[in-house]
Length: 348
Image 1: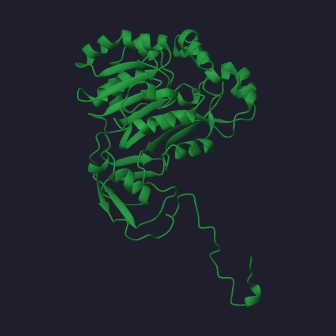
Image 2: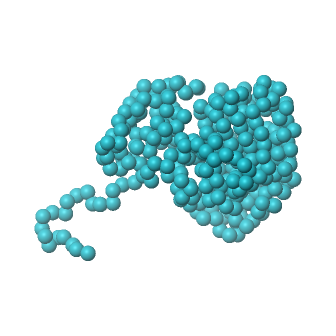
Image 3: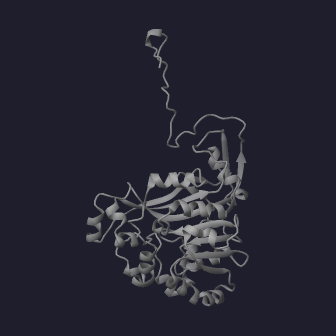
């Protein structure tokens, strides 16, 4: 599959318009503050963009960022402007043709931005430990519609977990399926190259993430993918595909479920371009100045990451109140008493 992907993205695809489905096309409306930064990027780099989401988490100034499957560098050069001259963005890709385009325009972007803070490495995202990248040296790792192209997703997540600092995060967009992909689809070269054949069943992804150390994956946003190519749509059959953006924090003390400790946070409204509310994920949109009850995991994601200076924190972990309500899991026991008649009781 490595050879297939290298051929597809290195030789067959010349621009975004060569794609045969919309899986690797991001229809997200860019926020106004991001548009000027995107306009600074070289047209050839923009024309070879194959992402399925917006992978620009907030508060990147001065950060060290790694892009897995950076391609021709669109997200690299976007993030380069966000981390600024004191930060660094490193891109990894296995396709030489894509990296050649990225490197060809490196001087152009350095002149445009006034600094050069990017570098590109040829390598495989399943083998990050071979690239001489220092463990726990990155604040943020991103990826845009690339993990699905890997044949060893466990190795990818375990490798990047090793490279993240404590409190760092993996913020990425990818394609997922509503079920496990049948062999006929996963071995189809065209569907694999179009980011469909290698898509994980969403529930299997959660297990892979948790086994890699990311205890509580958070879904930021998602959208269904409509396969407009009738031939490929027929091959996909009843399988439904989705583009989704997740953020995974490296916080080893996170619990597997959302537990209630009576905690809350108050957002200060100080994150740039987010004066009224802060979005942690699809279930946590926190208004400025409002006391917002949170579970223990959310409290730690905010308190033990680069987000901490922008919040006030209420409570600690001294008292536990059970599962946090509304987090998708409930106590399995019957809530109502069965009565006092001993004949109604059962023994195992």
